Image 1: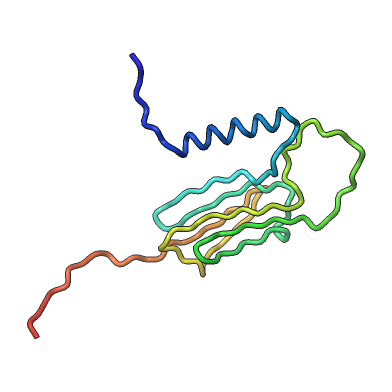
Image 2: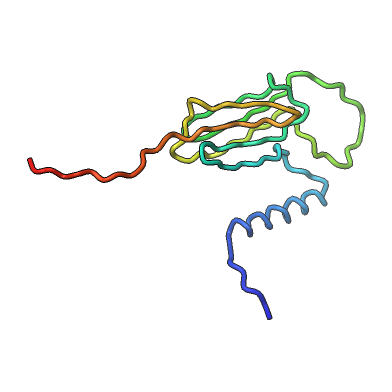
Length: 140
C-alpha cells in the first residue's frame, strides 16, 4: 500500500538545491559557502546560531535594520598562500554575509550576541504583547 505524503514546496526546493549543489560539485565548481546556521524560537526570543570557525569576534559584524538581521564576517589578516590544487573546498572564504528576515514583534534595540568555540549566537528578544482584554462600552 502506498503512503500519502503532503506536498510541501520548501521540501521540494531543498531537494532541488541539494541536487544542483551535487551537480556543480561534480563539475568541479563549488558555489560560495555560507556558515551553517540554526534558527529557533523560544517564548521570549528568536535565536540565530552560526558556525564561523576561524573568525575572531572582531571580524564579525551584526546589524538589525527594517526587520532584517545581517551577520557579516570579514577576515582582515592575509594567510600565506601556497601553490596547491584543491580537491575539495568547504571552508568559509575571507568574507561572508547572511541575512535573516525577522517577524513583527521583535525588539531590535536589545539584540545581544555571544561568541564561543567558533559559534556566534545572536539573541533577538520579542516585545511584550498586551494580552487581549474586553473593553466596557458606556453611554455618553
